Length: 260
Image (tube, rainbow, N blue to C red; front, side, top):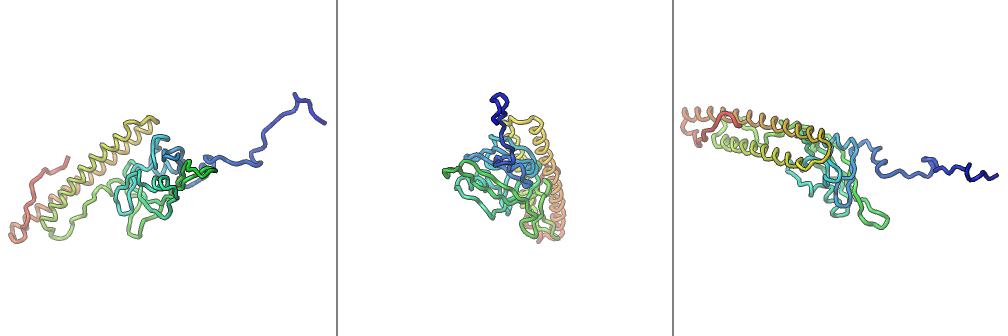
């Protein structure tokens, strides 16, 4: 009735019997973008859907709060990562719901999304980790476009395409365009500095750098085109002012034909 000890095989029960999958295995079954952090907000896991949404693969243990390259509020204001919904959820110890935001990929594409950050606690109630599910949303309102490439977001100043624009309006637009070009160069420098301590895949680093370079080029091209058009509008306005001196209220400073 009892087998000899050397013949008896002790085997673990089948995985289907009283089996509790790990948290990582549960998240791998998610089709939506999902990631986890430790109690201090450092990324510990993300699935392929999250990497696809972010546009790159951030380094685990070295990326904090979120894998988004940048985050903006729905009205376009830059949101520091330490103030993003995940950071707020971890710092407050409370889940965040009903918040909308816009993420930016390294290539400049912006995508509206809704996060669901949730603190995770152990049996004693101590916060030990956090998870976040990111749901891409169609649009923030009926008039907002989504998934815009870098060149579409490159010009933050309003178009001055009205019939017969005033010189003071054109001067303001020219100055705003020059400031936007300076911002492009500053942001590109900041983006490259973020990769200086990269210790992950060299191929991934090169891919991100290539995306950043392409974004910079597209933004510069769009803003240079805008600057040239504004210069042409200014010349036409000055010519109209020469014919009608009452309309020449402001003088536009001379500048180069192309912004470098």
